[in-house]
Image 1 (cartoon, rainbow, N blue to C red):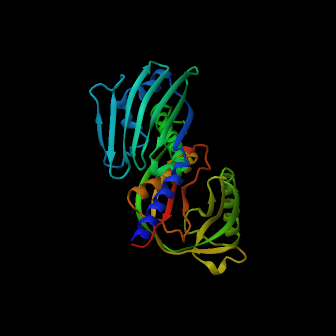
Image 2 (cartoon, one colour; image 1 turned 90 degrees about the vertical axis):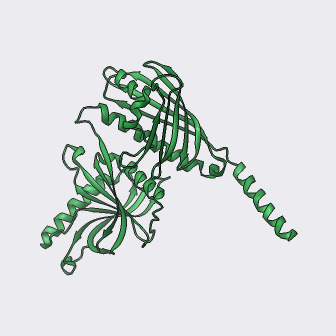
Image 3 (cartoon, rainbow, N blue to C red; image 1 turned 135 degrees about the vertical axis):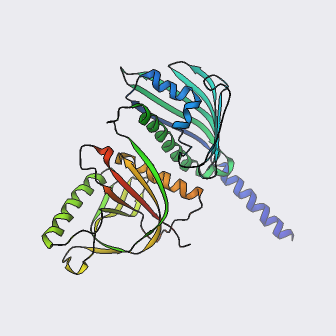
Length: 334
């Protein structure tokens, strides 16, 4: 018994020492120029009643309980939110400098606990406004080893929040997007012809346009009709290095006539689906939101199959806001 107690105590101490190696501090800063007057942009941040329109930690599609203080635009004003599927948090105004800066206290309780300060600064750019959003905080002790992951998540949250403010204020022709969660769906088995892309994530859009055009030409020459929209299937992605290995493909029905074209089968499975309407530049945020929703709903991904994108409406036209891309994350059988 004494040996067991000693070993247990040693393991606990070892874990505490390991976690203590990490400070748990996180620093995030995102900047965006919004095509709207400074007064309009400032109002979206300074009045907490406006946060329900763009708060990056609140999903419009999820049932959320929102509580506001009696006054929402002065020091001491508070906004609290909680939801089973998207988390909980509270933001409180500390100091406001009209048209210049807003300082806040922020506490996120889910999906991870972060306590710290939020600072907004605004700069007039002749009809446009430069908005800078800084977060400084510390993660809970139990999450210290994952502080880098938390920092990356917060950076995407801030970017999404700024994008949402821009969506509310910018002209209709400006790049914008919305994310629609479709939930778990059945994916039918399909064969697809493909070309392999291995390189930077930033270079993928151009590679995709070129590969799809080439595949379509080959199919036309062979007299084979496509049976679905273009796909991008991700077999290996390194977020840190910003690289990916993927197949760019087009579904077909008649495999026997594909000749020398590379053909592969995507087996039938279940997948969590989300749909990005608008600017393809928001794909990273759309993937992040899909994974966050899966985590909140305790839906486990099936890593044996590649996640993929289906390009329902191409962005080949000048109006990238007309693009529609469906994201699929394979999930484990029920």
